[in-house]
Length: 290
Image (cartoon, rainbow, N blue to C red):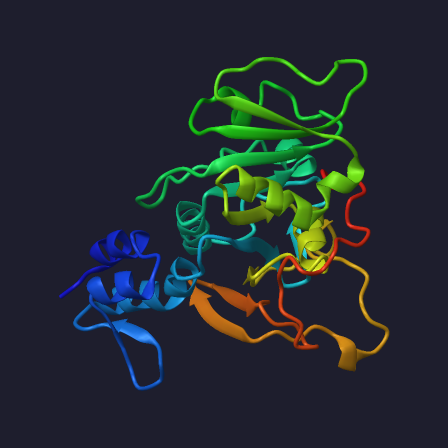
């Protein structure tokens, strides 16, 4: 019987339907693939992550963990931890399946995250820090720990010039203006660098901008059974005036310990327009680094 550890190792190598079939995933009458003989935990992993594995060489996803009342951190910025250990395992698996993980400057400053794969097998993605005003301290771990490559995306700085400081393991991408930080343009720039599978991890402002720009294929939103009252909000963007015009994407739900994971499929919007590069960026560039 295939166990969860073996199933995860197989899933990490799947990028096509042929790979899935070779790994022993059998298509059922409902069109979904399952292992022929596996533990319940292995089946859960296939059900949850196979769509991402088969998402192709260019896919953009986002993840947020929040309270029931929609906050990702307390009023002081404390986010350790809104959701439980099962959600952190889930987040690390998402990182392992992506080429790059993106955060804004606000999250980098407040959380000093590592953005590495630690709770499961897998390679660390390239850490992409959106920092147009160069305000993330160089002592922070994404710049100093050497655990994974980091791409520091900054705005043009007349005083420092274009080069910026030289740091081992850190590439600096200087963008000419604020419009170059728009989500779709950023994704195209990352793809040109071979980073086509992208996880937008935080914070709420950055994820919201990618969502509002219709630049995401999937959103993983984990809700914890806790009430904060106030704090750092999660999603927020200009919404419609009428409820009937709200975005209602196909959604799957799953339990992650005491938390609930909502997986939103954003590949097709409520108006049946596909998410893709054919739509121009519209007003999403300002203060992209939170």
